[in-house]
Length: 238
Image (cartoon, rainbow, N blue to C red):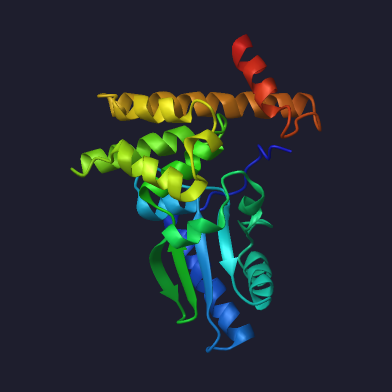
């Protein structure tokens, strides 16, 4: 239920290869005059725009295309030996999803003159991660990683920027997890952001390992409704 298992990782380099092949196949099926647009979300956007993540395991996306895109995705899956769902729209079923995301996306590349790829970056990606806030994923370490790169580039992100993104996407902090605003303010005020990144990354890896072990021992027990409680119990035992 919580999808703890992982396939071969997707890197920035092979992601571009997959998208190029996808565009070629879509153009072959649909013709060169009908465009498509994909907005990459989450881990794929991290890979493209930042340097602190080496890989992801699937590509969450918002896809605006004709039905030929589904056939193109299936072709790339089979021809390149990729796992089913390597490119998917499951993100639409999560609480982080809002159709407003596309309005705040950033142009990345156009492949084969038909497939435009956009990404989510900066404060809007942080707002999404704050809404998701999964201890067993990279949500908090991704937030810290983005803030660290912004700080190291000489353009530190402000709370005002993040506040605007939260409002643009989700209307109010009241719609985010209860501790989200306090957590981001604490991260922004932390002077040792390198150590903070390492600490969160370690905590997330530990949480993920605990859930994988639990799921191996008790298959089909975890659900979206009980996952947080189970994880809290496992971490308390540690």
